[in-house]
Image 1 (tube, rainbow over the protein chains, first blue to last red):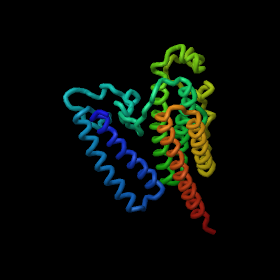
Image 2 (cartoon, helix red, strand yellow):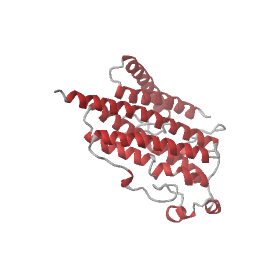
Image 3 (cartoon, each protein chain N blue to C red):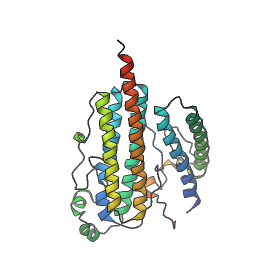
Image 4 (cartoon, chains in turn blue, orange):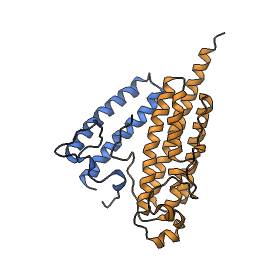
Length: 88
Length: 190
């Protein structure tokens, strides 16, 4: 697997943790431990996304990410074009 | 407002071209218990939820279901993108091909198009949340049938992830139902 896929996998793992904690917090908004975990994961996720975007272009658009040099949002691969097969 | 993220929620792998499996998996794209139905059901029910936690749960699970819809679409796309017309005919996907080529369209496994009557938005939060609990169980059951039908361990891996999320969503909807009951009880002070 190439470095870009490895970096993206790291973001996917962090964001999955954030999604799951988010849903838990929706029905347990007073849970301080879950909230601390959510905030910690979210900070790490934001750092990982910024590092990814500076190397490979925006992962989010509409003002939620920066594109360095040129408008790299239009660059391929789009998510459905990127498989994570073991040999790749 | 929604923001698109240029990534899937879960990394997919597809071992080989497999239009037969695509024909079955596509039901979770546009079938009665599929991800489009799930997402639209929750995102349209949220407006009349009586408590803030329920509005949050329906918004967030409705949004996650859009990400699941994209995972299912990516699976189908990769299963058929290199399929020859002969392979498509042999898999029984030729009726679909006649109308859609290898494009993605919202149909169930038998080719029937998605219809809004798959979902309900009742305005009664107890009725709506019970529908949502049932919807999660129906989606879980569908993923289990698809796992039994799958002959590609990589596709099975993604189907297992999606199945697991239905179980988590069922849990959150159950908690939401309890919160709505508590809210209703708190209003009835005699």
